[in-house]
Figure 1: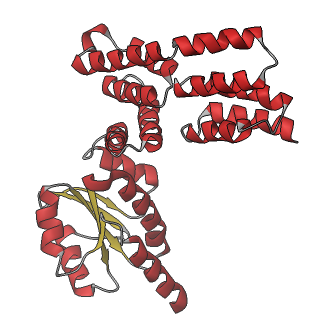
Figure 2 (figure 1 turned 180 degrees about the horizontal axis):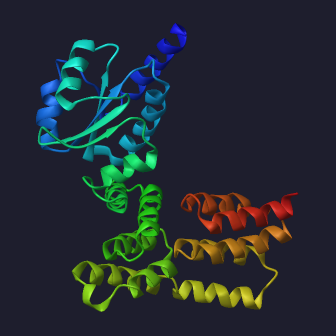
Figure 3 (figure 1 turned 180 degrees about the vertical axis):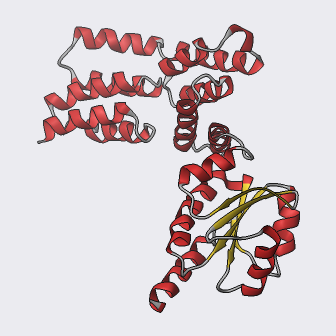
Length: 302
């Protein structure tokens, strides 16, 4: 029993190493519940390692804290360790059960959830005081873009779009990312779905970028190589050159399809297979195109 409690305390201590999760003590009480609550929502949780429901709820809070980042501080009051402080605060709020969650803004409670709560109940309560999930994902997408992390930028923006497909700013940020990762058909579709009265300067900028990218996809070099492939359909070297040109232009599906025709003829021809795999690796995580062409490659490997 005591070994289990010690283990739970250790795990909870590790969880609280996150930037927006702290263990509440008399030393940081004023800063957390006073100064910090003036800047962001503080979620105070009364916790005991001896209570299984507290431990279960702790895992939920870790997940939520990670998602809300700088918008939320989770302050855990360990009632076993900080008994005097726990008693003092329990009297002030009228604590009746463990676990209990108290939401504070500007040093004052704005909501309280006594007893064990489901993840959805906690999320519903937080939604009254925090930005919507799609707005948080949009912020993360923008930050990833600034950091040139296109893979995560696309993932965050796509999730935001799935949560709110009618949000114009989400559409435009996702379209911008789609242009940068050469998903031009998707970018065009997103831009076309923006209402006329919401086509602002940002829309105009993204639309110009899309048009410029589209113009670059059909260069004289590509047209010349396509003509050569048509004239010499069994020349694998020309097909390899065309696939490279298509890839540079962002026409990744056509590049993969051209490389696949080469690999079907000669699985080990020049650098066809490494190039094929590199293009797949350059696609965003979870991209259906990557799955499709992995399967096609496996079909001729095995």
